Image (cartoon, rainbow, N blue to C red; front, side):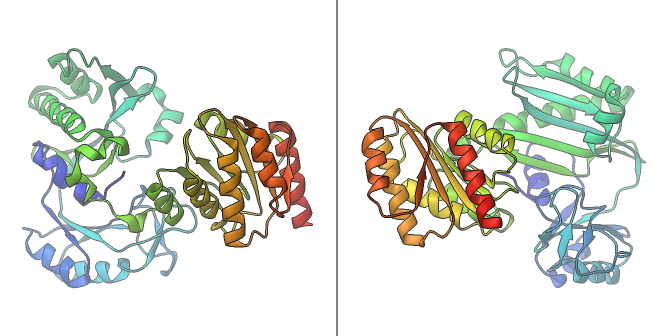
Length: 400
């Protein structure tokens, strides 16, 4: 689960992380009122969407010369003008894709005189299962570009959970950022506070870009991206309240209601599979046969008929889907249950696209019988390779 920048900064501030003063705004008047609470004379008006690259982004409704989603203002009138242009318009960034995201919230913060910018992040290292620090002197830039062009400027180390954060970890952060003296001490303190926040919220990511040194020698978090482990949200009901469902894909949101692992992709062949590894293999073999999957969808190992029906309907709600491949290996999951769900969903939504089904495992013969006697135009497949070839061919017929 991701949250907005203003929510992230409010949360980090509770752990003692230094952030500039700022206020969220849902309207133009609220934005002006927020600026009125700040000392000024410099303000920063920031669009709040779940995507990076806001400063370099462009609004669809405005001309190509219009400013992006992060703007400086030197008066309340400028704050009002910026807020009026941003709210309700669609911001397109490198992370939103061409469709962009509508801006419904703003964050008005106090302006800061910046002497130097850094990058600092805490992530979960999937190889070691530990919290890792990523630090770079190249703040304010896309870290992916830094990694590609100057990888030597990125420093990474992880923390042993048996010892937790130790003083040498803080010194390592300061050294990676090239800080000495009082700034080095500040970096150690910030690192410790961020580590506490990461553990205390079951975070999956805390990305600070930039972490800035101000002209008066203070280390301050100017932008923050925070995400949480959704599986741990039962321990953080207060954090669940920060969720902004308007920022989420409607189909992914619907899938979450049924505990389905669904991710929308850019292809036209819908996939329904049980097991993450099998789902990845299914998507790979579709691409191997010259087509592209429209989604990742794992119904899990013990799905009910109702859950399978919901999964099928979610796939079909995507207008890009021109065909569906169901690939089930029944262990805990019974093939007859899958078949009943497929038939129920196909009849309910009046299936209009080709459907290829490959079943194997528990009660497979009963599952095949249910599909065969359903009266639906279902194409059976013998194995995964056969299924992929058949669905690609069926979709090709529709396109022709």
